[in-house]
Image 1: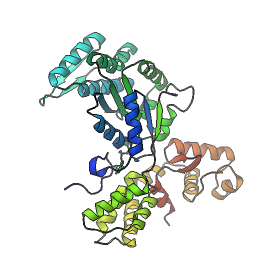
Image 2: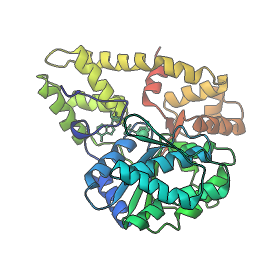
Image 3: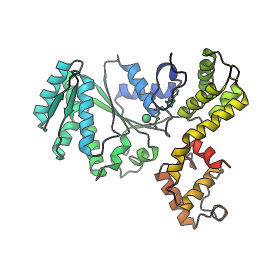
Image 4: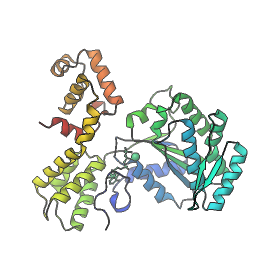
Amino acid sequence: MEQLFVFGKPVEGMSFTDREQESARLSANFTAGINTFIISPRRWGKTSLVKKVISDNKDGGRLYVFMDVFKAKTPSDFCEILANAVFKQTSTALDELWESVKSFLERINVGLRLAPDQQSKLDLDFGLSKETTSLEAILSLPQKIAEKKNVEIVVCIDEFQQIALFEDSLTFQKMLRGVWQNQKNVTYCLFGSKKHMMEGLFDEETKPFFKFGDILYLNRIPLPYWRDFITGKFSSAGKNISEEQIEEICRAVDYNSSYVQQLCWYVFLFSSDTITEEDVQKGIEELIVQNTALFESRTEVLTPVQMRFLMAVASGVHDGFSTSAIISKYKLGSSASSVATRKALLDKGLLAMESGKTFLADPIMGLWLRQP
Ligand SMILES: Nc1ncnc2c1ncn2[C@@H]1O[C@H](COP(=O)(O)OP(=O)(O)OP(=O)(O)O)[C@@H](O)[C@H]1O
Ligand SMILES: [Mg+2]
């Protein structure tokens, strides 16, 4: 039986709703060869969107490469993940993969060890040196393959913000931009779970990725889509949920896609045929319980003033943190230290900005903080 509500992993098919405008824009960018940054708060659906658009466009003549660089700690790691993904996802058969690897790597002259496993899969171990020439050679692979195969290639890189943590990250960012912007037949789609870090890669003129491409900001999935989606799921299992209850669920989690599905699952679990107000409340409580350990570990490292700042935001203060009224009410020290505290919490990913105002990055953390 298909899972009713899916959360915590990318969704597709019957577990996926809306994203019509974003899908159309991303498809158009892929077709036109426009690089894209996708930006959204955590768990709103970036990875799911990219996977869906790739799968919708699979037959369009382009080749798509999807990779996740979360585990990359160095430029060499990054290049190794890239080379593996590019070779494997642009070759249709094992023989072709072998040929492709051999012909390209002879030319680019990097130390290569091929380790074919028993399942006739290949793992490419490049034993990469840190020499700039080798890294640049690997980065140029997508364009070389595109030329040889006479196709356009779209490379989608998830958790791209990790490159900001590399030692001497700026040098590597400059290298990436330098190589990528000259690739005529390759388009890049860059996104990641840490919004603040992602934005930090291109938010100033001095940054290598400034104006690298289109910036696609994901919106909240609007209520009418959730209404149809949630009503359909409940009724397919013989249960009744009202429009008001659906709206309450969406609002309680501030339309965070993952939390909407997770909360629906708890409400479904705790209810009988007709959903009651009590079922919704129990679902919300369960969502808080499920996250409590995480919230505790993320806040126990905070200083008392950082904690008071979070409490201020949780109680509904979204701007004016340097005014004497807010500073004295929440004991935030001086105006300068209030600014510094806010920045530290933004950098930690605990706070987020929306329309110039400051909010908790995680809507359930707000419910948790406000608990008596
Ligand atoms: N289009 C969608 N329709 C319904 N639910 C969705 C959709 N997109 C995302 N979700 C919900 O959000 C969850 C997280 O999705 P996904 O992993 O794609 O988000 P993300 O933005 O990539 O997350 P992260 O910020 O952690 O990288 C999914 O498991 C699902 O519950
Ligand atoms: Mg993701």
